[in-house]
Length: 161
Length: 161
Image 1 (spheres, rainbow over the protein chains, first blue to last red):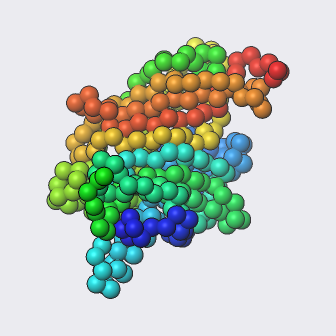
Image 2 (spheres, rainbow over the protein chains, first blue to last red; image 1 turned 90 degrees about the horizontal axis):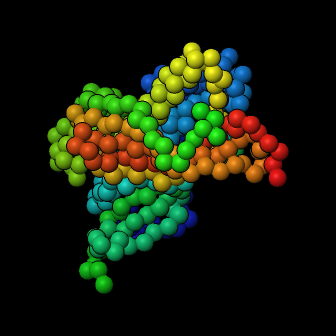
Image 3 (cartoon, rainbow over the protein chains, first blue to last red; image 1 turned 120 degrees about the vertical axis):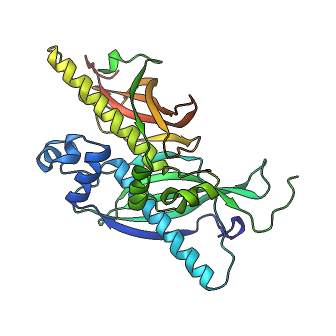
């Protein structure tokens, strides 16, 4: 997708992931070794009420699904003979929210929705797009949300005014 | 540390981590399988100029070092017979920036600095603290930054006004 192809409000589902106890503990041991991420009983005694996934795990799984969805769509576009837009690296994001605990056994369905788009004033070949990425659990409750920024190439770059 | 103990501008070093090629590829294969995170040659051909760590890897390592630093300090305080403040779960963060690529062989030193503090209006036993967490590479260049929010217990809670 080029900058011109992206419509504000356009939403796509990028996949789902079930957070097993084993996956939660494995990530936590490496990157977030707090007791409620490592042990069921400690999780039950905590504010989370159960073995809870690290927030960084919830975000990293979102990244994985966004990347593999993008790769799948790029392969499909290439198979149709279309030119593939190569997005730039992300400069970061803002407004990340861990809204509800993600407990062992929960399945999050992730989605991405275009929130804003504008031209880069310094680099006329690029647009800047913000996307609201979310994770919703099997009860339909929003558990995770962030507003990501990406540089997206323009299909027909013009000189900056 | 209780809410009252935290001073704006107070900074602590929480540890450093060297991003080896093996660690970069292992994280990327699980959570961010883009070519420049998985292969040296693809990294060299990319805007990063080398095998680059996933931004989520850079952030997850920051979390690991913050947690282990906190656990070490809590153990030291307990050994001195002090009461340990149990921080609440983080509701999220804002303004995450990936400022410079983190390439294979780079060592990031992470630090955390208190940026703001205020009382919770709805929960008088808690304060809300923002900390600017950063990762600086071996050349002294800022590579990673985020503004984290945490609920921190008050030492002497009073009724809300």
